[in-house]
Length: 440
Ligand code: UDX
Image 1: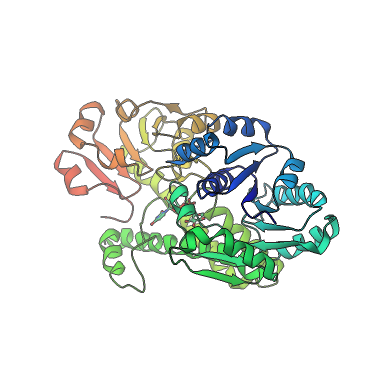
Image 2: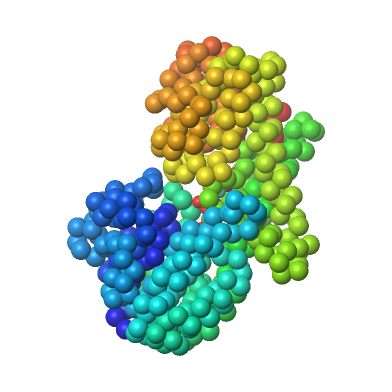
């Protein structure tokens, strides 16, 4: 097997990052995508999404010839004997379950072309039990039959930190019952393992579960602190001080204990829903019923933010001017999938307000999805003449803004800090009426 050549199937967020970073680590990489436009764009050194540092890695490795892209599966099967499956598994439009269309299509396209011994490693997030079915399908379809091994190696990268998280993962998990697959994965990970990173070998099912249970835990932690924010609001307590006090217990820790508008994006919300749907199929629905509460708490933060703004503005939104800071689901990303910020902005607009949104990176995508909102190309432009300002994504430039400067352009110095990103004392000292989730 030619270990230094790999193919990466699917060049969305995960696949493009994985392909570019594997090239950076010294492998010869062929990225495969059925979307020719994406292939052309990536081949020309342009990313279809914003991710800090990735475009440099992409261009460096296109230039040195270690990275190429194609839409031809046959080229991938010819080029490499190690294939990573990195296609997306979004939520199905008609239910909570994961849509496995892309995973199935990738396997059905690749497997019949595998005429030599090969290793297929799935990285997509899939419902537990999917990989075992894929192993059977590969055995049926691949001319090389049992010489094609399957492993599942979940990916834990965070958007905004994709390059770092791929080059320096905090653990590598490989699920497989094939010794050959495990040793291939160990070889591929050698560059990262030099840093003493745990390398965990499991069965296929456990590897699939690691990913969804990690995301379920993170979502639960965020909703836990947001539930405490609800209680704090009712009781007149300060959830930020509460979170700080909790964080000093290292069994709890301070990460993912940030109260505010809650989680969004392409992973956490759809992963907990798909996990519940799978538990239902497995006959263990009660085991994960708490996740529907996690989801509900998360959704309530969005409506609560709208309510705070309504109270602050003194009644209805009809005919009022609202300035919104942030559209992406989190800072350092242009991803607007299930973005709490955009949902709040759209709700306020649907209630009759004139809403103007600014985001450093996500404007173009937001505009496509929500043409009914107005968009500005700077923070000051977005809040000009606003009767209330909503901070909904905590970009660095919003955290650092001078409240004095902002006060000069708004109609009324009123702000809802949906991310607990600002210092209330500082803003109040400059004449602002400041409201935040979970604080008096
Ligand atoms: C997540 C997982 O972290 C990652 O390991 C997995 O591979 C994919 O899903 P990502 O979706 O990129 O990554 O974003 P993440 O940084 O986890 O944030 C998720 C959401 O939680 C964001 O909307 C963020 O604003 C919110 N969040 C995070 C909080 O509301 N409070 C916190 O304390 C932390």
